[in-house]
Length: 325
Ligand SMILES: [Mn+2]
Image (cartoon, rainbow, N blue to C red; front, side):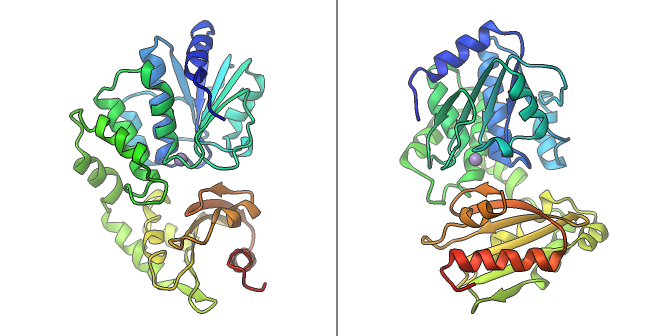
């Protein structure tokens, strides 16, 4: 559902209340964080102060983006209005944001995921759009002035969710927005180098370990890589810096589902799912485990015994590929 008056209504309501909160999804990615930042900046330009709700402190790479701007909070106070971005279901909201949403008088959501469950009072949904950042741009365009900071934030969110403007969610509208934001003095080459392609020396060791762990199933249609707790413990690298392995395994010839399992805390697994096949939807696998995401890139969390988790994952992948369980 899309409404032309969504932006006007949101601004009007938020202007008349005292406290406004913005939240993205659990385990935030760049689009989640950047859409929070974009929303906050747009509200600021409309003379509305808003806090961004986080579940826990951000990983160092993300923290770098926000610390420079001093605009992220982990508050405990009450809010009159809560705005969720990039979050298709309330179970994907951080627990503290969900609590605030239940108590707030007004609630809004802006999103681009399919199967958004409309858990807020007002929802602005552009299904299949490149990113939540693009939804925010298109919804609020008459209500903000582009500046260098806002352009950088939009660029990062859109870049991340389109895999660098190559995924199938990259539409003509995406490039229209890019043509507008790149008019400002932003430096795409530096943004991409600093935040997306730069690799820390210890990340190479992590990549080596991840590549060593690669196993194929079902004649090479399913590939699994795993970074276990001891890998994190020995290399001291963060989860955020270890995720690049999925970029490699999904590209292997014949692979239809790439699964990467990360265990940054003992017995606590973050699972990333990727596919480069146009006929495979990995979000169906994620949903079976209460996760979510997109057709080509999804994820979830699992707990418990590793072998059991792995077996369950492979079984679901086989089922999505139409292979017998
Ligand atoms: Mn997104």
